[in-house]
Length: 107
Image (cartoon, rainbow, N blue to C red; front, side, top):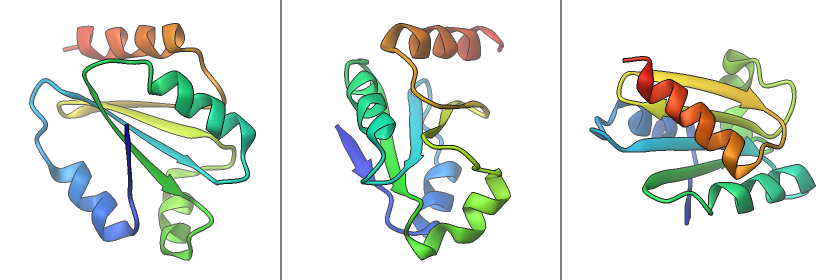
């Protein structure tokens, strides 16, 4: 189940939390984006993760979107300990799990 990030301050706070061995996924999207909705369904099939979402149409995120160079949605960050990877577009559950395994094994 996803948790909605409502502002930049909350995003920054989440990025500073030490989640230990927990994988964190943050998606950047909008309510009108069909690929975002499909990606959400794929992510929700993955066990033992923390899932956050933010709506880039919220003016609170203008600077963050520019900083992250989010030019295409959905844009997704996968975070594990102090490492992260990102991707754009729709991915399958299996593809996301492969990205998680690569991230975890890069320790």
